[in-house]
Image (cartoon, rainbow, N blue to C red; front, top):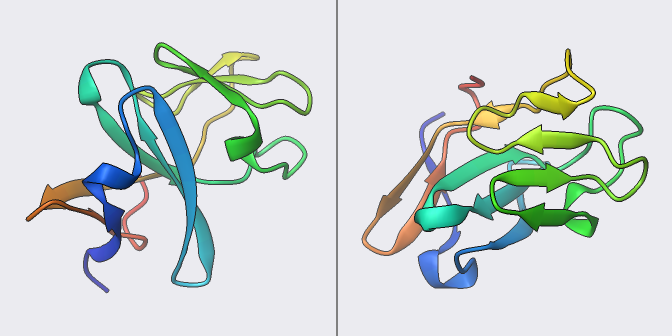
Amino acid sequence: MAFQRVCSIDDVWEGEMQAFPIGGKQVLIVNGDGGVLRAFDAICPHQEYPLVEGALEGNILTCSMHLWQFDIGSGEGVNPTGCKLKVYPIKVENGDILVDLEMVA
């Protein structure tokens, strides 16, 4: 499977995040500081809670269930450490956000 269209770049403004169904999964698109786009599995690895219900402050994504925090640059856990979000390759073409669900970083 190759890159698949998830949404338009206009659907997720800088400082926002949005979950989208694609390929039988929920994918979280995050538009961080400076317009840095990232794509993650939309479920927190701790208690399988939807990350879109959390908060994005700068480049830190906080799950609202138990306040686990992740660096959106790498997907690595900040609090606690030793955990990581599934990170998917992402690119923008012709104003569309595309994600490859088979390649997990």
